[in-house]
Image 1: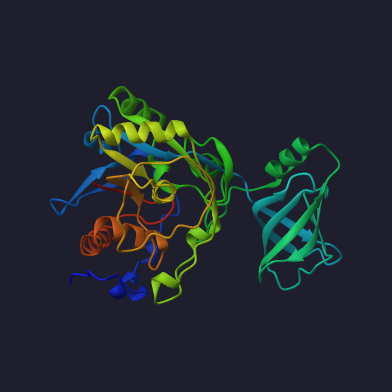
Image 2: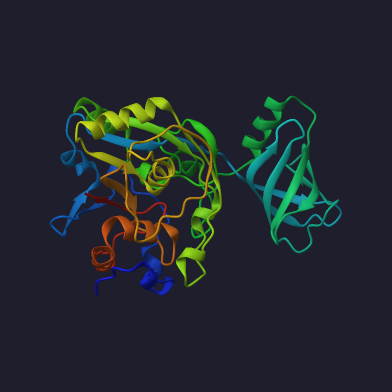
Length: 357
């Protein structure tokens, strides 16, 4: 069935049965040896490859747009004063460096009230006080720590765990610190990894560079909202969480020069795609940007910058799936996902990849 009219695109179009065993608990042994499904929109074809084969689809002068955000160890475990109850504290973002104020989620949230103190580390060397409620699980914490700002941040890093997504039911491992991070991560600020980028190894990036592929880096600090399923049937009513975005003039020049020369421009990941689609000029070129974006891309959408993209396999009812539908075409996407399930591709953060050309 052809869906031409946006009024017809409803949440129910994005529901499918995803077998639990296809959710990737661990990454592929080698980054670039996950599987790669290649979808050609013109030819309406689906091919099965390895991720390292991605190089065959790009030539000298083509551009890949990378999100260079870096995940920080955002998950802490503390104890509540008096009761000693174990509380998970998930750091969402820093509100004020000087006052050490942070926006966090707490779990279980029921008993965490304004004025409560939480203690972290075996020696209780870090203490936080709850100073505000923001949502049912959201709190504002003020950290109390004797030491410089740098020492405080080092302490957070020491006590924090890699924030692998909740769907992964195992304990975090030392390997996660390395593997739940792209090798080109630079700018700290994300609480979730831009997962399409996880497939690039140093070796593959080098080979792409030698072949003449250029890289444009943008920074979008991925928030937890990226995992939130849409809950409204009318997609236009869904509100995205805002995320911090920076696009430099240098990145714009790389992208716009490639576009002017009719070269291929590939968004690596839904976060890179959302970043560039948040800053398009009236001439359909990329503009510099510094601020926040809550851009929600769902069908129908005219993409202005990238003509291909790399992405993982997404969960039902996610905003990520809706973007893929808009980029790929809904019917072709459905076919691809049916095939992915049949062929037992791995889904979600540590899963396999898809290249849409």
